[in-house]
Structure formats: structure tokens, C-alpha cells
Amino acid sequence: MKRTVDVDAQPVVKVVGLHKTFVQSGPWPWSESREVRAVRGVDFTIAPGEVVALVGQSGSGKTTVSRIVLGLEDPTNGEIWLDGERWDDQPESQRRGKRVRYQYVPQDAMGALDPQQTALEHVVETLTVLAGKTPEAAHDEAVSMLDRLGLGQRLHALPREMSGGEQRRVTLARVLALRPKLVVADEPTSGLDPDRRESVLQDLIGNLPEDAGCILVTHDMSEARAWCHRIFAMLAGRVIEEVDLRQDAPVHPYASVLFDPWSGPLPTQPLATEGCPFRPDCPRASEADGDVCARDEPALSPADPRQHRVACHVVEAT
Amino acid sequence: MSEPLVVMDGLTIRAPTRTLVEGVSFTVHGGRVTALVGPSGAGKSLTARAVMCVLDVDPGLVGGSLRYPALDPNVDWYEGVRGGGMSAQQRLLARTRHLRGAYFTYSPQAASSALNPGRTIGRQLTMAIARRQTPPDNLGAEIRRILQQVGLQPWAAGALPGELSGGMAQRAALAIAVAPKPRLVIADEPETGLDPVLRRAVVELLVQVCKDEGAGLLLISHHKDTVKRIADDVIQLRGQHGETGGTA
Image (tube, rainbow over the protein chains, first blue to last red):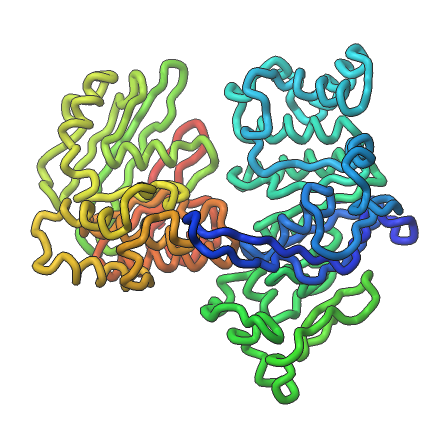
């Protein structure tokens, strides 16, 4: 992957002190509802050209963070800045016209496609409705983008006539044809075979505009390692490590479980609600000073967000 | 090596325009983990369906023989089906109905979505246990034992699938798969869509429960690391042409 990251330019995404609390109702109408703190203090910036992976177990808050960044959910607390502009406090009427620049690739490609539209019609419609192109210009651009993604022979195929990989490519073509500034892709390769995953990511990241940022939500660590400049590992609604796996190895005691689950024993205890969430299962907690792991939740350090950072009382970033 | 449960020899399945599976031969042994691997479109799921005699392809089965030696070493279940098209495959389906859910059970992708949402876990386990040849002396105790084996509390027997968390529903589905005391459990990509930590937990539980219950496991998997760590035998299907079976 040869994308240049312009770290001095204005960040594409800046997230400050993000919190999100959901109220979850039980299975029955009379069940008591409870509060779920899905995101508990997340800060990061993404520079133009940068591809960042959000990784973590189910329920760690990855999808919630990525949806809030695009304004598909409202944060309970915190700020979202896109392209230097405060995004989360704008009313939808103001955001609507700008959404064309910030695009989302859904996990369920089949569910995101209209069963009655062909591959070409999907992309043409996006270009005419969202980007305001004339039908003729939209047609030419759509054909060229679908051709670049290897769908040149499948322009008139309906979703049900396409393979899983082809359906994904239509959702990618629809997003990439808009030349977005930011693409958030929520597990764009889930359910595909390993040999097809690689080519879908190649199509997505290889065709991103040069100055676009990208957030890739994924469960596949080898994908994150191969395609992303930085990886944000999440646990219980917080980022516990920010690392470029092409340069550094992860050091957080939980990250080693997450990045290579077969390397040692699996966590068995529920996450702690006070102090460090991983403490009940942490093999390194005994090395800490006193009961600091049980008392205080560690923050990411060092402070410089461009460095390898880790949130742990015991280990330090390399 | 323990007794063979399934002996497949020269399985060949054709669709109208192309060959889906050609000349696949393998043996699945009891008490062992056999992984079925191969690139997409190599016919992994189709091969697993052929093992269960669930075929509805036209013209479908054109070659091969299938034996369940632990049941009867002399019967070739594909006798009279080869080249017979859909109607012969329907007859095979009817003839082997008593084996599905008894001699072998099937755990589909996203196993928890295969639970019946309107019946309690205990009721679904009761129905699965009823497939056994010899019923247990104490049904309630047996249900509690199986639930404990998959790491569920006894109260789960009274719960509807919707009242369980995703991980608990997955465990309940596994309990139902092993409840009939099958000789073989066939699991189709049990780790699909799970995060890496949960993926290992689910696969390890599956292997452990099958070993405890004395069942063989035929596992379809995409994940090389899973296969490398847990499989005793590997059946490798190659791409569109010239698949061959083999054990490693």
C-alpha cells in the first residue's frame, strides 16, 4: 500500500472526548431498561490519506464510534470535527448537502442494494441524486468506476445475479464514484472467503482519493496489519492501544489476546467496571504499584497522538 | 485410529453446465476432528451435504459411494442414486431421514439463528434427546448435564432464545447439536462473523463438547489458524477442477 499521509495538513476527522450511552430495553415490554455505556472517552485524529483500523471484540464500541463520526448517531458527549468543521452540532438540514463527502460502506452488501436495480443503475443514481451530475456524465463516470473495480462485464447484473464479492464491489463503486473525503467501512469483507477479502480491500483502498481518510472496522487482524497506517484497539468503549503494526508490536496485555487469540489463555472473567476493565484477567496487573489497576482507569500515553500509545499502568509503548 | 464413521469414495456432483465436485474421497473417523477446507466455490458445503445425503442438484450425484461403517459396513447409500437425477436424490433423502439428527447432526453457520424462537431451550433439548435410540432415565437431569457441559446454567432450560445473549444462544445451539448423542457433528463455519477471541472460544468449546460426548467432528472452516490448531485430519478441496481428497 503506497498512500502518503499528510500529518501536517488539517485532519479529515478529529474526535474529542467522545461518549455514547444507550438505553437498552429488555426482551419483554415489562423488562427493566438499562444504560449501556458503549463509548467512554475516545479521542483521535485521522490525517488526509490515512487509513485507520478500529479493532476489538463484539460490543467494544467500534461500530458505534464509526457511526457517530458520520453523524448516523448523535454522541452523548464530545465533539466531532470533519474537515475542520464542527459536525455533530449541525442540524441534519445543514449536514445533508455535505454528506456526499463522508461515505459509509455497510457490512451487509445485499441488504444495502436495491433488488430491482442493476449495478450500473445503483452508481448512476448515486451520482445524479447525491453529486448532482447530469445523467450522461453520471453514466460515463459510473461505467468507468465499475470497470476499475472489475465489474465492466457485469454492468447490467441485478444484485441476486451477483456473487457476494461482486455485491460488495457495487457498494464500493457507489461510494468511490463520489470521490469522498472520508470513507467509513464497517467490516466490508465479513462473510467473504480469505482469497476474496484481499481483492475487495485492494479495490477499496487502492481507489480512495489521495487526500481521503478511511476508517476500517474489522475483525481480521491480518487485514488491519496489511492495509492500515494505524490500528486502534478498543476494549469496553475505550481505545487501549494505538499502534502501527508495520513498525511496532502491540504491548498492551489485552492486545496480545486480541491480535493473536491462540497465543495464550483466553480471558474468562467479566470486564471490571472500575479501574482497568481488563484487570480481572490481566497477567501483568500484579506488577503494578499497589492497587492502581483496580482504582484508576489508565489513559493513553504518551500524549503525542502520532506515536505508538498504550493505556496501561504497567507496560509502556515502544 | 478410531473407527471410521463416514467413508466417501469418488464423490462427483454435476450441475447442468459444470462439475461442482469431482472425485472426492475421504474418511471421517470417530472421536477426531476432521477439517474440510478449500477456496470458495470448491464445494465444501456441498460435500458436507452429500455426507448427510441432502442433495438437490440436477443432475446431481453422478459418481461415488458413501458408507457409514459404524452403522453397516456393507451398505453403499448411493447405490441406485448415481445418475438418477433429482427423483433418485429425493428417494435417498427419504431413506436416510432417520439418520439426520441421530447418527449425525448439523450445526449451520450462525448456529444460534437456527434455534426455534418460540420454544424454550429445554423443550428444544427434549426434542433433540428424543432422537436417541435409548432414552435417558432422568430427562431433567440429562438436560441439566448437557447445559452444564456447554457452560450454561440450569435456568437456561426455561428461557426462550430471545432471552439469551448472543454467546449463550450459541452455546444453546451447540447443546442441541450434541443432545441426540450423534456419532458425528457436522459444523459449517461455526466461527463466521465472530470476533477473533470469541472465534477461538467457540471452536474450542465445540471440539471439547464433541470429544466429551464421544462424537466425531467434521468442521468446514475458512480460518487457517483454526484448522492448524485443532484439526486431526484435513480434507483439502481444490478449486473448480480436479478436487482430490486426502488426510494430513
